Image (cartoon, rainbow, N blue to C red; front, side, top):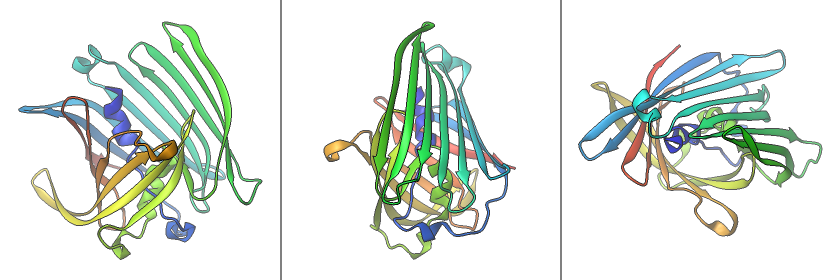
Length: 256
């Protein structure tokens, strides 16, 4: 079940140029998603997620909460919270935190960013993992990367500033992504415009595929697909990924 929620969190992208982000300040908003599990004739709601953006004194404040449905709790219970801060200028990530209650584990990841070196981005990362109330992992490390860098939460907003309208199908961009324990590479392939049907309505979207790799270019997870509204809001409308059995679909149900 944790994979279901991760699909939503990981639908991300970024341009290789910071100018693509623009300077217009994003407005506060709340997005609601349902997480659907599909396998053969089975098509059942497995969870839900809410993503909120607000304005702090000096930065954006972002929060994502996710939970599995009662029937899915019996298989794999998920209660996740992600918190993040991003600079108003350029959506630069400043802080990222993931508090996860998944199955019998509790995890707490924290990433603090440092931009004192003009040639690289440093991230001071800590991770604690508890199993049945006992601390099993207590790790800290420093990661660094050159070029555009995001985390799982920041990237959700970052992708919405990309110039998809000027890309041609097959265009691929890459960036770094930090978690609490490692750095990965994300390749974003633009697959072209697409009409997406949601609740009987056709919505113009940009269709995108995400490819995640770790050291040596080895895939760290299956490819994921996203359909992002082609209007000025650039809201992710539908996300799709594979599971060992079946597929998961994350679908927008409302916005405020």
